[in-house]
Length: 445
Image (cartoon, rainbow, N blue to C red):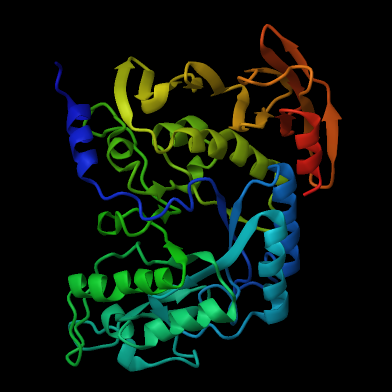
């Protein structure tokens, strides 16, 4: 048969390491912007973060969340490291943070932390120049200013011999962390040398004895590390990067093809740049699920848009292999395993996603099953949407509810020719349940 780039991609795909955990597969993952030292007030206090998590739960019908709090230590984001014992008072202090971490469970949210192992600061109580990497001239490796403080680069191999593992143990116990933590820069710089004459380390040694050791120490305690950029050395070791790579127009005039998602979709989950947060066809084509930053001021309608328009459809196809790909003019079609298909017109931005021959999303909105008991409806504009009545559902028993941050409202549903029809207000999530008892149970969460 025809041999093309896709045949080669399939071959390479088979050689890739499998993803290290499926914990993140079904989660709405985001970062919470807390305190920044250069600002007078925190962007989000711990009490406001609890309200944010509550609102997201209400608008997503209690979808599982991973909420990663930034700026929580010392004077704010990127201060105090490598110490992590002091919680920022302007955000609420230690007790308020622990209340947030505990209360998140009631909203189906795992509240964890955004930290950093690459950077250290001279004013930290844990400052130790012997743990700082050296430049070729022997000087301490100074990085740059982060929100008001100058950071120095940690020599990861020597740091993870003793001090690093002790730090991992302390933070997991002190903050009662579970399942996930974001370690900034862990994957951004996969290779960094250390010219310390007492403890020289190549980039490879720092990777294996340093960065991999961070992942291993957290994993021993049941914590999956996620980080920033998708980097090859982390495949099979780091399941998720909140940023990543998506294709652009070829400057040499070639055709953009989904090579990266074809090869890596079973090895990692990656995001994309912030500009594509609401660009659904781009995210679905490149298999990216961005990791957004939210604050107390974030419009809750934007969060609902991101979850229903991008995250929910992405969850249905992200680990399905690419079996076919065609492009004719501006139209691209990806055929996925299990009978799924994604089609996009890059000129008009029209797109559609079908599962087993049934369309579940397009540029008009989402009409997609969440699970065996729920179908989600969402549109950026007020309109009527239709979804195929799932197999085994009794049309006389279904119940529709509109979701708000503080309540739920019943909405009329109509079933004709085996299709559910819902009139969806702009930006308002609506969930149709298999029957009213399931709707009542979900509403009492």
